[in-house]
Image 1 (cartoon, rainbow over the protein chains, first blue to last red):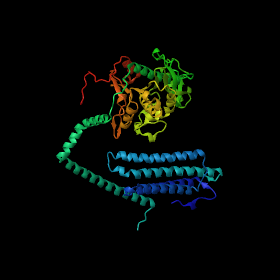
Image 2: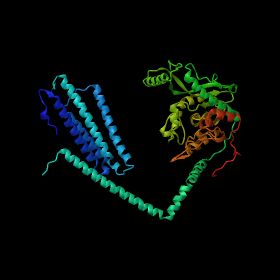
Image 3: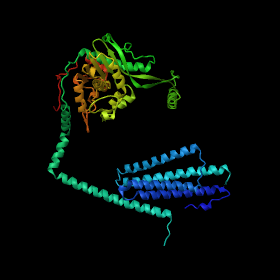
Image 4: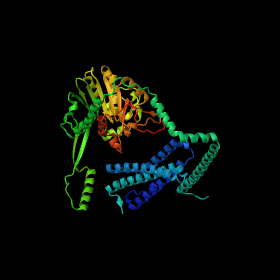
Length: 151
Length: 387
């Protein structure tokens, strides 16, 4: 878990930012693993519920990431547009993961059963990564504007 | 007790889930395979099943052919009260060609007013007719022509290729010099004389018209407005005619209802003419008994209910078809739940030009009709088949 109390108050060091980035990325991986476990539930008739839970976890993860970056909100329109495209890309990659496992199922029939887990894990991982990047940029922009970052 | 990190717990959970899911899925697939093998064994031990399956496989095409025949015979066809008129058929196929030329001239000549007298294939045969109207669609066509200002003989092949790549990139970037203009979309025209009126629709010319022709779902009156028909018809053709129905009806209302009204079209013009004939019969009853439909190279258009209603409303309908023209064979009589039939008394001929296009072009139909080779009688040439 990220300990917010470690954030320097007077000035921000680049090593602290780097550490925070890696810590959040680690949290994203945990979320992705958790979502994959949920997607592997044995109840085939609960797809909608599974997707809802996974969606809620992804939203929770995005909120947590934003919280870890202290709700940094200095973003240009270009950055916001890029972020939205990244989210679309994450959806696409999740879908591609599903298709990949379905294709692999031609040779290994068991594999399609893991398709949903792979898709949601990929989606969560990429959404987390791009969200982390997005708020890091906002954080840096905000801090550099007031000269708080030290080497 | 050993302490685990969150990551270790998650990885352990994921590993356990993957293992459990994999084993469960493998067992399920194994059970399905065993059940399939068991059912296959049971089926192969049943002489009745084997006989039925083999017969179905062998006689499948015969059954499909029998179904087509049954569908075709389900519609009672009465020969038209008025005989097929060869001279008028020659005039109408010429008019179909003029319809195409009218569209193409309108596409490139911004001053063109739709008059057919200036078109290349206009002949004295149409003397005595005056053009009462042009059928113009509601949309405008956007025409673009790319102008290559650097077009010149280039001795250097590498430079030539370089220029081509540059032109392609510039075209993609919208940087090329283009001429662009909008034109009205002509769909046909109405001719009038003291003896007869003629309404003609042209065939497919634009890309979106091609796309419409493949929309072979059927729709009934409740799914489309703008014109009237009975039964179910091809969605794409109906969609096109719906945009032309009002100008068509308005033009027909100005015609003398005491003389024959010939409605015709080639290719896409055929279903449009067929729909127009029924629409006119339903919406302009005064002229209903004067309608004679001549369709050339037309695909199938509607279901048996539509065809029966059409034969009743427009009994004087003739369908001229080249037996080697694939357009006249689509959509198939039966596609799943959809059933398609032709409208009109068939007048057929045969050409052998060894390609799809030449079997369908207006020039082929025009040549055959000018030579009066189309016939509604059984032919003498050798035919082999299951019938």
